[in-house]
Length: 139
Image (cartoon, rainbow, N blue to C red; front, side, top):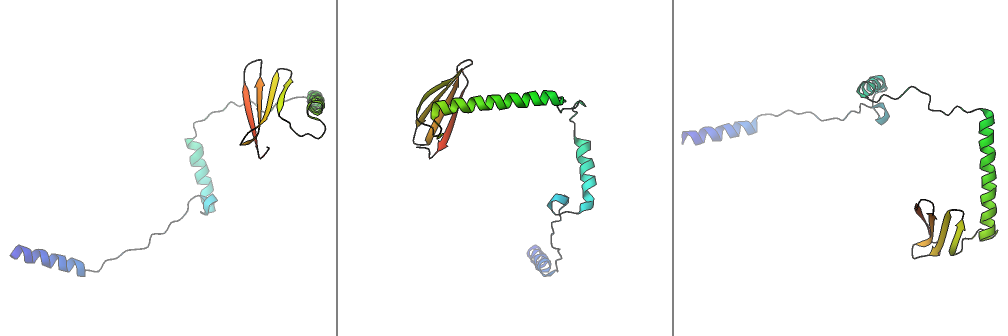
């Protein structure tokens, strides 16, 4: 009986004791998410210290002369004009895609309507690569 009274007394006094707590507050560390701007250098140095990537120091930018860039630009414009001319011959000047099968060199285009919209299958006959483009609401 004494043990029960001691346990009951302990529980009673533990319930009466005053408890203290404090409010938990989130404080952002990263300055990009509202944290202190003085943490930026520390975070940057920590990230650089952990970075194990070692890229080569060669310049990744293509160093071409003005003449080479001009030649490439001219070639692109000529090819663009040629493809526009072929496109107009096949589809007309209104540019509306009509169902059918069309061949451009080694590329075969098959255009058809489906429940998803207008479907364009592009097949490269040289290597068998195939791409499908779906234009929603095209039917």
